[in-house]
Image (cartoon, rainbow over all chains, first blue to last red):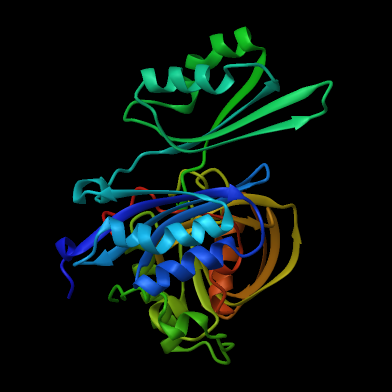
Length: 186
Length: 167
């Protein structure tokens, strides 16, 4: 069996104007290298397509070989490429039984919604595991929607978060609701 | 009766269509005991289908009475043979996971209220209406009888961020 130390991990990000064939082109390059896609999230943001992948390879390998393969592909597609070597301790995750909460924040668009909300969460050591934002509504009445998934530290509750954010809700005149979405195992 | 090991995908039995039980006998009673014991053994488990322990028969057990989502609204321990859903209404999304597909969870839409017919272990036909969490649990377990995993129904995915220790 392959030892964990024989495996190298890299974080790869690719961003550029959306069009059909981006994923096939990038993953084709990874396949040629014998790369595993261990974890990935790819999505369209406005007209841009953004890929974030954690890839793994057996030693011997180097970051430059990864870049040599992917850079020409990205250049051809007009996309930017980022590659970072991950250390073993960045790959290992702590097992926790945290409750997972979804926080919805929405209201009239204004500067600083994301900053003000996440600052309060950071101050209480609440870890964000997923976040997305969307500008909806009309040009006359733009509405900002912020959805966050967070892991609750020991002792925190959804009610506690709502209380923490109550002052902000008033100040920014936005709606904020918090609910538990911890997966149920059948 | 002993707790049985829970099969994990890609075990082929999990994708098999299970057969109707033609005769409720000692073997079926033993199977139900195994299912109940296996369910109680799984941490926080609220149901097990026969195919999950390697038996391709239309039998499953559900008990949400000890779960925080189901304790207020349930029928206690349900041992269902040849269950059939005869009516469904409402739709709600819940993030589900499954003992047969560890380290993975995803949002699944299911009916919030179902009416179902099944044979109990005595062979009597029962008709119940289950709602909310209990209804979701029954639909999840009954899917196993058709070889359907929650992965086949996911509307948005979320990997088990906190359960996986390493790649």
